Image (tube, rainbow, N blue to C red; front, side):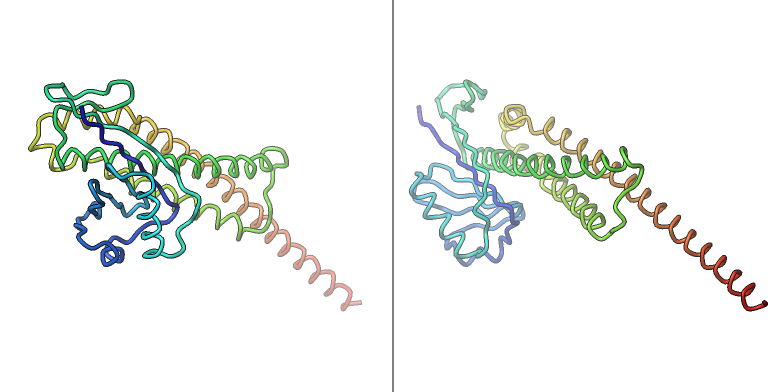
Length: 257
Protein backbone atom coordinates (compact mmCIF):
# COMPACT_ATOMS: atom_id res chain seq x y z
CA UNK A 1 0.00 0.00 0.00
CA UNK A 2 1.21 3.50 -0.85
CA UNK A 3 -0.19 6.60 0.87
CA UNK A 4 -0.34 9.95 -0.90
CA UNK A 5 -0.88 12.86 1.52
CA UNK A 6 -2.52 16.04 0.20
CA UNK A 7 -2.25 19.33 2.08
CA UNK A 8 -4.15 22.45 1.01
CA UNK A 9 -3.59 26.08 1.92
CA UNK A 10 -6.09 28.81 1.00
CA UNK A 11 -5.11 32.48 1.04
CA UNK A 12 -7.42 35.47 1.13
CA UNK A 13 -5.97 36.87 -2.08
CA UNK A 14 -6.45 35.53 -5.59
CA UNK A 15 -3.38 34.42 -7.55
CA UNK A 16 -2.32 35.27 -11.09
CA UNK A 17 -0.94 32.03 -12.49
CA UNK A 18 0.87 33.70 -15.39
CA UNK A 19 2.66 36.09 -13.05
CA UNK A 20 3.75 33.18 -10.84
CA UNK A 21 5.00 31.03 -13.73
CA UNK A 22 8.56 32.51 -13.87
CA UNK A 23 9.07 31.75 -10.17
CA UNK A 24 8.38 28.03 -10.67
CA UNK A 25 10.68 26.54 -13.34
CA UNK A 26 9.30 23.37 -14.90
CA UNK A 27 5.72 24.26 -14.02
CA UNK A 28 2.86 23.47 -16.41
CA UNK A 29 0.24 26.15 -16.86
CA UNK A 30 -3.39 25.38 -17.76
CA UNK A 31 -6.65 27.30 -17.52
CA UNK A 32 -7.41 25.65 -14.16
CA UNK A 33 -4.07 25.56 -12.40
CA UNK A 34 -0.31 25.86 -12.26
CA UNK A 35 1.19 22.39 -11.72
CA UNK A 36 4.69 22.45 -10.22
CA UNK A 37 7.06 19.49 -9.60
CA UNK A 38 8.47 19.45 -6.07
CA UNK A 39 10.87 16.64 -5.25
CA UNK A 40 8.96 13.34 -5.38
CA UNK A 41 5.67 15.22 -5.24
CA UNK A 42 4.05 18.23 -6.84
CA UNK A 43 2.20 21.45 -6.15
CA UNK A 44 -1.11 22.62 -7.61
CA UNK A 45 -1.69 26.38 -7.54
CA UNK A 46 -5.17 27.71 -8.30
CA UNK A 47 -6.23 31.24 -9.28
CA UNK A 48 -8.78 31.44 -6.43
CA UNK A 49 -5.96 31.54 -3.88
CA UNK A 50 -5.59 27.84 -3.03
CA UNK A 51 -2.39 25.79 -3.09
CA UNK A 52 -2.34 21.99 -2.77
CA UNK A 53 0.72 19.85 -2.06
CA UNK A 54 0.86 16.16 -3.02
CA UNK A 55 3.54 13.97 -1.47
CA UNK A 56 5.47 17.03 -0.26
CA UNK A 57 6.97 16.82 3.28
CA UNK A 58 5.95 19.58 5.76
CA UNK A 59 9.36 21.29 5.82
CA UNK A 60 9.43 21.36 2.02
CA UNK A 61 5.90 22.79 1.95
CA UNK A 62 7.03 25.74 4.06
CA UNK A 63 9.95 26.34 1.72
CA UNK A 64 7.60 26.30 -1.28
CA UNK A 65 5.19 28.68 0.49
CA UNK A 66 8.11 31.03 1.12
CA UNK A 67 8.90 30.89 -2.61
CA UNK A 68 5.24 31.69 -3.35
CA UNK A 69 5.28 34.65 -0.97
CA UNK A 70 8.41 36.01 -2.63
CA UNK A 71 6.75 35.69 -6.04
CA UNK A 72 3.50 37.17 -4.75
CA UNK A 73 4.32 39.80 -2.08
CA UNK A 74 1.54 40.78 0.30
CA UNK A 75 -0.08 37.37 0.77
CA UNK A 76 -2.01 37.28 4.02
CA UNK A 77 -0.72 35.20 6.90
CA UNK A 78 -4.27 34.18 7.82
CA UNK A 79 -4.80 31.00 5.85
CA UNK A 80 -7.02 27.91 5.81
CA UNK A 81 -5.31 24.53 5.87
CA UNK A 82 -6.84 21.18 4.99
CA UNK A 83 -5.40 17.67 4.61
CA UNK A 84 -6.51 14.49 2.87
CA UNK A 85 -4.95 11.11 2.12
CA UNK A 86 -5.21 8.80 -0.88
CA UNK A 87 -4.26 5.16 -0.34
CA UNK A 88 -3.11 3.21 -3.37
CA UNK A 89 -3.90 -0.53 -3.02
CA UNK A 90 -3.60 -2.79 -6.11
CA UNK A 91 -6.90 -4.47 -6.92
CA UNK A 92 -8.94 -2.22 -4.62
CA UNK A 93 -12.23 -0.71 -5.76
CA UNK A 94 -12.23 3.12 -5.60
CA UNK A 95 -14.00 4.11 -2.39
CA UNK A 96 -13.82 6.37 0.66
CA UNK A 97 -12.65 4.34 3.67
CA UNK A 98 -12.12 5.93 7.11
CA UNK A 99 -11.92 9.40 5.62
CA UNK A 100 -9.38 8.46 2.95
CA UNK A 101 -9.74 7.69 -0.74
CA UNK A 102 -8.69 4.14 -1.65
CA UNK A 103 -7.84 3.45 -5.30
CA UNK A 104 -6.25 0.60 -7.24
CA UNK A 105 -3.82 2.93 -8.99
CA UNK A 106 -3.10 6.62 -8.78
CA UNK A 107 -2.53 8.37 -12.09
CA UNK A 108 -1.59 11.99 -12.73
CA UNK A 109 -5.19 12.70 -13.79
CA UNK A 110 -6.55 11.25 -10.57
CA UNK A 111 -4.06 13.28 -8.55
CA UNK A 112 -5.24 16.42 -10.36
CA UNK A 113 -8.87 15.62 -9.54
CA UNK A 114 -8.16 15.04 -5.85
CA UNK A 115 -6.11 18.23 -5.64
CA UNK A 116 -8.93 20.25 -7.19
CA UNK A 117 -11.55 18.98 -4.73
CA UNK A 118 -9.24 19.51 -1.73
CA UNK A 119 -8.47 23.04 -2.96
CA UNK A 120 -12.16 23.83 -3.35
CA UNK A 121 -12.90 22.57 0.14
CA UNK A 122 -10.19 24.78 1.64
CA UNK A 123 -11.43 27.79 -0.34
CA UNK A 124 -14.99 26.99 0.71
CA UNK A 125 -14.02 27.08 4.39
CA UNK A 126 -12.55 30.54 3.90
CA UNK A 127 -15.74 31.77 2.23
CA UNK A 128 -17.86 30.17 4.95
CA UNK A 129 -16.03 32.31 7.51
CA UNK A 130 -16.46 35.46 5.43
CA UNK A 131 -20.17 34.84 4.84
CA UNK A 132 -20.73 34.13 8.55
CA UNK A 133 -19.18 37.53 9.32
CA UNK A 134 -21.33 39.22 6.65
CA UNK A 135 -24.40 37.50 8.08
CA UNK A 136 -23.65 38.84 11.57
CA UNK A 137 -23.09 42.37 10.27
CA UNK A 138 -26.33 42.21 8.29
CA UNK A 139 -28.22 41.12 11.40
CA UNK A 140 -26.87 44.16 13.27
CA UNK A 141 -28.03 46.50 10.50
CA UNK A 142 -31.50 44.98 10.20
CA UNK A 143 -31.92 44.88 13.99
CA UNK A 144 -31.90 48.68 14.10
CA UNK A 145 -34.55 48.79 11.37
CA UNK A 146 -36.68 46.28 13.25
CA UNK A 147 -36.43 48.05 16.62
CA UNK A 148 -36.46 51.72 15.56
CA UNK A 149 -38.12 51.58 12.19
CA UNK A 150 -35.26 53.61 10.75
CA UNK A 151 -31.69 53.21 9.58
CA UNK A 152 -28.59 55.35 9.90
CA UNK A 153 -28.66 58.34 7.58
CA UNK A 154 -25.10 57.88 6.37
CA UNK A 155 -25.40 55.78 3.22
CA UNK A 156 -21.73 55.53 2.28
CA UNK A 157 -20.90 52.74 4.73
CA UNK A 158 -24.08 50.85 3.89
CA UNK A 159 -23.45 51.05 0.14
CA UNK A 160 -19.89 49.79 0.70
CA UNK A 161 -21.21 46.88 2.74
CA UNK A 162 -23.73 45.97 0.02
CA UNK A 163 -20.96 46.03 -2.58
CA UNK A 164 -18.82 43.78 -0.39
CA UNK A 165 -21.66 41.25 -0.06
CA UNK A 166 -22.27 41.22 -3.83
CA UNK A 167 -18.55 40.83 -4.55
CA UNK A 168 -18.28 37.92 -2.10
CA UNK A 169 -21.19 36.14 -3.74
CA UNK A 170 -19.61 36.59 -7.17
CA UNK A 171 -16.31 35.13 -5.94
CA UNK A 172 -18.04 32.11 -4.38
CA UNK A 173 -19.91 31.40 -7.62
CA UNK A 174 -16.69 31.80 -9.65
CA UNK A 175 -14.76 29.35 -7.45
CA UNK A 176 -17.52 26.76 -7.43
CA UNK A 177 -17.96 26.79 -11.21
CA UNK A 178 -14.88 24.57 -11.09
CA UNK A 179 -17.17 21.87 -9.73
CA UNK A 180 -17.82 21.03 -13.37
CA UNK A 181 -16.38 17.64 -14.15
CA UNK A 182 -12.78 17.73 -15.47
CA UNK A 183 -12.35 16.45 -19.02
CA UNK A 184 -10.13 13.58 -17.81
CA UNK A 185 -13.18 11.91 -16.26
CA UNK A 186 -14.42 10.88 -19.68
CA UNK A 187 -11.20 8.89 -20.30
CA UNK A 188 -11.28 7.02 -16.97
CA UNK A 189 -14.60 5.35 -16.00
CA UNK A 190 -13.51 5.06 -12.35
CA UNK A 191 -12.85 8.81 -12.19
CA UNK A 192 -16.55 9.61 -12.27
CA UNK A 193 -17.07 7.43 -9.20
CA UNK A 194 -14.06 9.00 -7.49
CA UNK A 195 -15.37 12.47 -8.34
CA UNK A 196 -18.75 11.74 -6.77
CA UNK A 197 -17.18 10.19 -3.67
CA UNK A 198 -14.89 13.15 -3.13
CA UNK A 199 -17.66 15.70 -3.49
CA UNK A 200 -19.72 13.76 -0.98
CA UNK A 201 -16.79 13.35 1.42
CA UNK A 202 -16.12 17.09 1.48
CA UNK A 203 -19.85 17.90 1.31
CA UNK A 204 -19.15 20.54 -1.34
CA UNK A 205 -22.60 20.71 -2.91
CA UNK A 206 -24.51 21.15 0.37
CA UNK A 207 -21.95 23.64 1.64
CA UNK A 208 -22.26 25.63 -1.57
CA UNK A 209 -26.05 25.58 -1.36
CA UNK A 210 -25.86 26.80 2.25
CA UNK A 211 -23.54 29.63 1.22
CA UNK A 212 -25.82 30.60 -1.65
CA UNK A 213 -28.83 30.61 0.70
CA UNK A 214 -27.06 32.84 3.21
CA UNK A 215 -25.78 35.19 0.52
CA UNK A 216 -29.25 35.53 -1.00
CA UNK A 217 -30.62 36.25 2.47
CA UNK A 218 -27.96 38.89 3.05
CA UNK A 219 -28.68 40.58 -0.29
CA UNK A 220 -32.44 40.56 0.28
CA UNK A 221 -32.07 41.97 3.78
CA UNK A 222 -29.70 44.68 2.60
CA UNK A 223 -32.04 45.57 -0.26
CA UNK A 224 -34.80 46.17 2.28
CA UNK A 225 -32.47 48.29 4.39
CA UNK A 226 -31.40 50.33 1.35
CA UNK A 227 -35.03 50.87 0.33
CA UNK A 228 -35.86 52.00 3.87
CA UNK A 229 -32.86 54.35 3.88
CA UNK A 230 -33.85 55.85 0.52
CA UNK A 231 -37.46 56.33 1.66
CA UNK A 232 -36.20 57.93 4.87
CA UNK A 233 -33.98 60.32 2.96
CA UNK A 234 -36.78 61.07 0.51
CA UNK A 235 -39.14 61.82 3.38
CA UNK A 236 -36.61 64.22 4.90
CA UNK A 237 -36.11 65.86 1.51
CA UNK A 238 -39.86 66.34 1.06
CA UNK A 239 -40.12 67.66 4.62
CA UNK A 240 -37.32 70.14 3.94
CA UNK A 241 -39.00 71.32 0.74
CA UNK A 242 -42.29 71.73 2.61
CA UNK A 243 -40.63 73.73 5.37
CA UNK A 244 -38.94 75.95 2.77
CA UNK A 245 -42.30 76.62 1.12
CA UNK A 246 -43.86 77.50 4.48
CA UNK A 247 -40.90 79.75 5.25
CA UNK A 248 -41.29 81.53 1.89
CA UNK A 249 -45.00 82.06 2.55
CA UNK A 250 -44.36 83.44 6.02
CA UNK A 251 -41.63 85.69 4.60
CA UNK A 252 -44.01 87.03 1.94
CA UNK A 253 -46.69 87.69 4.59
CA UNK A 254 -44.16 89.51 6.77
CA UNK A 255 -43.02 91.62 3.81
CA UNK A 256 -46.63 92.51 2.93
CA UNK A 257 -47.21 94.15 6.32
